[in-house]
Length: 243
Image (cartoon, rainbow, N blue to C red; front, side, top):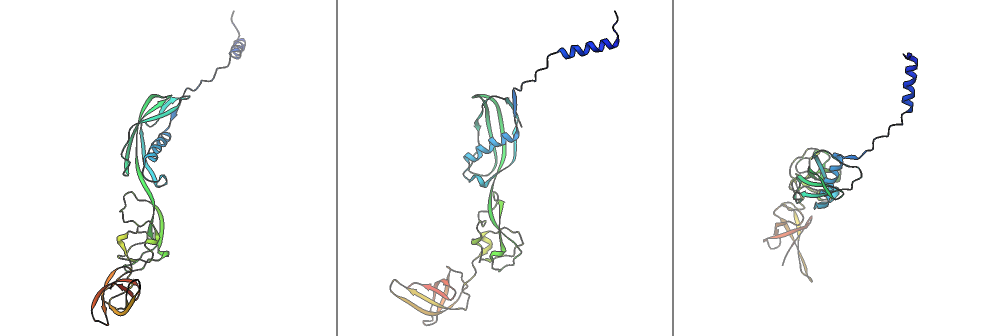
């Protein structure tokens, strides 16, 4: 017997409605992303580095593989199989065995550049050779100091009041070799030469023969004896010598 098209359609609807609903697929795995692998890399670096964690920055991270698929209910851990020296900055390579429920599951090789950040002093404006640096001339900025020389200035107080030994542009980083203490006495200045012991102090007039900053030893002519001696600069107009 030939069924009419209408009856054929109705039978199909009945069959479809009578089927039990499909069960959703159960997820059994998840993916450890590159960001999660970088967190493991960072954790290892921070635990072994001699520097403060807030001074460190990891750049150019990569991993092989870039991600790892693991069981969704597994307990994830790792063991370090290769780690670098942490006594210097730069490129670091760390290899780990990824563990799931305590069993080795996968190997991952991670790479990243370790940089050191810190506050450094730089100029707010252009200054010329011989200028005395004031508080308004200096800005402290956070900067990658990994490759900078050891004489970098990291406290503004270390340069304020100092004299520039060379002209510098605005934004220039300040180093100890670029500044010097300004002279407190200059050649030809009349000063008081002071010599003292625990119970005695003697002062005589003198004339400075060299420029000198605080704490420096300069040649001074004793105007009473006419002899030249060496004395340490204490303050403007005052030098000190020993008996």
